[in-house]
Length: 188
Image 1 (cartoon, rainbow, N blue to C red):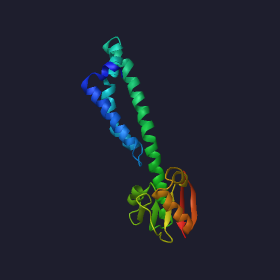
Image 2: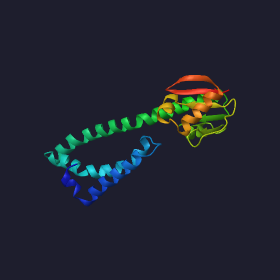
Image 3: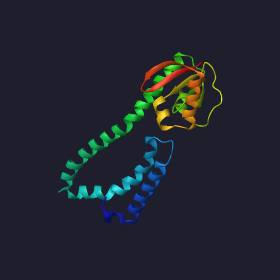
Image 4: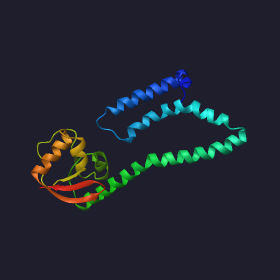
């Protein structure tokens, strides 16, 4: 994007809205890649003049199509794959964790980061997210699914880490640690 492009009101506003939104998102304590998707339409508008310049530099209409469209298709496909891969991996992991909890016949689950997925995949289980508030008691025999490294590093002093510390103090039997960094344990 060139400076002269920013003088066009629509483009200037699109860039401003994208920047304000991204600054707002940067301050959110709970975020993932999905929250960045809302900025994409504004950035597409901002890059429209640059795209038009690339098309205009091609010599003829047929040459433009021959040179530009295959490249655009490949670039868009690569960007799509790059953007979607983490979501697909996350969904796979969520299903693996849910399958393991189903094998264990879990009826009560405490988690950090998988609450919505586990509620949908295990409707018969009562799922509690550890990040909403500090909990006083934990049901014996319940299962816990967390990423301990994330809790201890990122959430120090906040409800997820405090609840994890309380759970460890109460006693945990580790059931599985081989789930992409996730730890599955049973409350003792």
